[in-house]
Amino acid sequence: MTYEEMFADVKGRFAEADVSDITEHLAYQFNITGEAQGIFYVEVKEGSLYVEPYEYFDRDAMFICDADTLIKIAEGKLDPIMAVTLQKLKVEGNIDKALKFKDLVEGQKKKKKKAKRKSDKK
Image 1: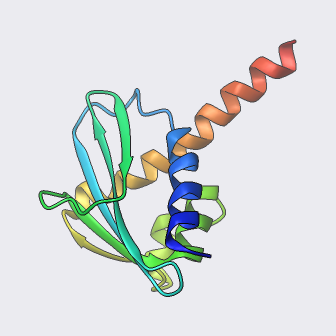
Image 2 (image 1 turned 60 degrees about the vertical axis):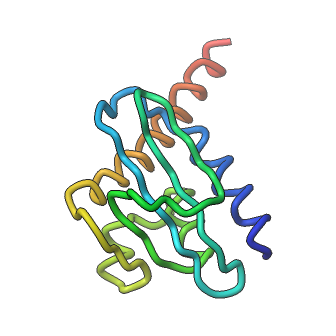
């Protein structure tokens, strides 16, 4: 997998997240190691989510992991806190704001459940 493929996959998954409940500004930089090595950021600002392939110098937290770990987290197959415990994910910066990354992942699941409920009603 290339960086471009990984970034497109992750951006698509995070773009589905419902961040309407997140009222504070969050800025995360992801440093991907290994095969799909590269950097990108995820920002929640004023109820909107941005995912861009750049460094974020004024970030709240930086996450360091390989692409497989990040994709499992984005898919909801691996809890971010468990990934840290298993030493598959390294976190630097503001730990309180880093813990809110789980809210982002949960927001993605929440949006999928809403969409499923709507399609079930039809």
